[in-house]
Length: 478
Image (tube, rainbow, N blue to C red):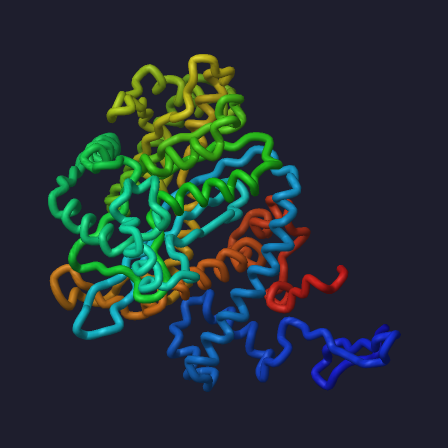
């Protein structure tokens, strides 16, 4: 039965049988400065470098990393409770989910070995609500490289075909050496003129690989992590889509807009093959010409506006969406077949400033599909990488250790990243902190509805305070 509270505020109970008392600690039990949790969380998601946080808070590195561990654990607890509703088939309506990858680098720890460690995350976000369903890093901190390599040597596990290996998901030293040799010999193709040229170049580059689904590459200026194991990118993709499969069970339908990557296509198809057969899930490749100046983007956008205005003038008083769909349908007979899979690419007639030149390929077309031409045109019309790209840009702008390199190259192919972490696990933790903050606590200035992504999706009734997450206690009844 209840027996008051401890000096630190934790509830105390007395056993009715033996009369002994005991306390149930809360999330901050044992912390000396719990009042600083919120401030450190906000600094982390607002691009404060670690050294500046330690200087400002007068704390040592061990204290800061301990705080990050606590914040990460609390975010996991909160998401486990909140996103558990997704596993219970929360009604989600129609989702338009963009999926892309982003690269990161950690700095070297020894002067005599100045090689970076390349990692990447797979990001999925709903274009309509902005909710980020995952930002998964291709890294597993639970395993030790020396122990894994010793296990491999027991029976030459690395000599088996990849699919039969016990440690197939991990990058081994032998994989690293083979990748260096393959990367040096591989030809790379570039499409410099149009967005369709770029799409053709990516197909050609993929076809030159031994396995088109494997896009990870190492060269001699890169190395594997010293702690934890780097995971093959294709395994991360398959796991990512399996998470989406379970989380999105309550969706009425899903349209995936994927970065042009053969591994991403395969992972999506493997997870959602039944839903694709029943027209519940559709998938598109999207490629955008990003190497454009602001002036070029503006010119392309203005040209699209003129195209729409002319169509509107010729069609009379029709709904704007109807006119846009009509413009898409005009492009359907003009699609260009590219790549070994003979994917048909449509050049989008109405690009935006964020995606000034864009093309899409419908990947899940089937002869027995019940999708009408108007439905297909609408999926082309709203095809975009906006959701994933917006969050990935937020990562660069708000997480100091993951910003782009600012310094000049210190040696050929080697770059010192000013605020980059030394331990890859920090990346995993920061990505989760930012995902929780973005989904539940952040409303951008100028937002039309003033809602968070979680509100729009139906996982929250309002904007949450950071404290609601940091001091979330799953043992307490609401």
